[in-house]
Structures are given as structure tokens and as C-alpha cells.
Image (cartoon, rainbow, N blue to C red; front, side, top):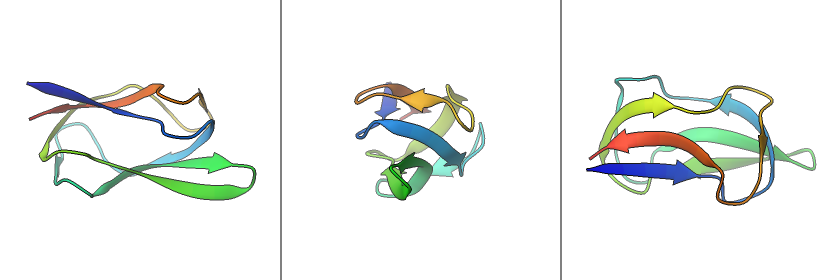
Length: 72
């Protein structure tokens, strides 16, 4: 099953802290969004393996923009 990690705030992608193939656990930081000079962490909601990364640094995010796909 696949789960998509989505942006919960609008802003710019400051960094992605995982790579494709990495194992992640629920609650683990996977990316950071910069919103009005504040860095906001994005966390995995489920345990899984990073299947694909849909964003790169400085991509603009809206609420619910897909960022990372996890294979659970």
C-alpha cells in the first residue's frame, strides 16, 4: 500500500531529509517547509520505505501538496 506525505502548510521546501529507499517510522521527520522565515517540520504518518520524492528544494507548496510517497 502507498501513503503520500503531504504539506500541511504553504511555503517553500527548505530541504528533504530522506532519500528514496530509506526506511522511515511514523513520526520521523522527512522534510522541512519554510513558511514566512519559520522552518516547519513535515513528518511521516506511517512506517514505510520511501518510494519516491516528488519535491526538491525551493519548490512551492500549498496545503495538501504531495511531497513524498511511502510504501507501507
